[in-house]
Length: 182
Image (cartoon, rainbow, N blue to C red; front, side, top):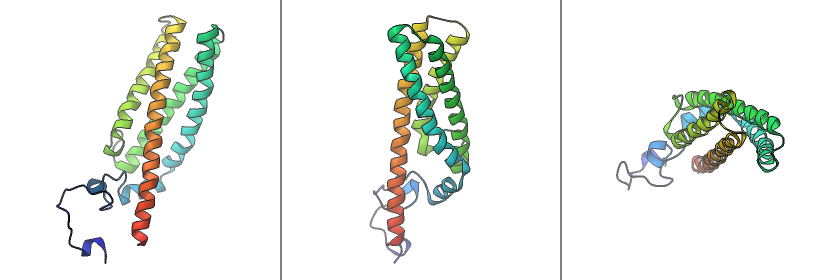
């Protein structure tokens, strides 16, 4: 017997873990239609490639920034690495916004990724502030590097948010597949 054939023992609008397949009823990350659009979108692949590239750029840049702050050496290399990290960040944000539009019908702040997008704006703001300081020759080298580190700390938190969502999506996908097979 299918779920729609059964009388529901739960009041309408009540959230019950695993009680349905639509996000509005369960808190699921994706509806079936959104999951299908996600799986069929080339932008999902683009995000899957850019995310580890951005992380590798971040690790190299972090090392260069820490070297510059601790030894005073390598400022040019650190600045170049931060600019590259910022450009990769802008790229992943633009393509991520396109992905969000394809999957959820909103350029940004779709309910499933609202808080991740909010925090992404902080990451973008800090990286952009760094560019303003660098290009405007504002502040000291140390101040610029500290802004970069603040941006990197925000990036790590934001990356953690997205990794958590990816894990939840996989778990929910597995549960959905198990429920359909049952």
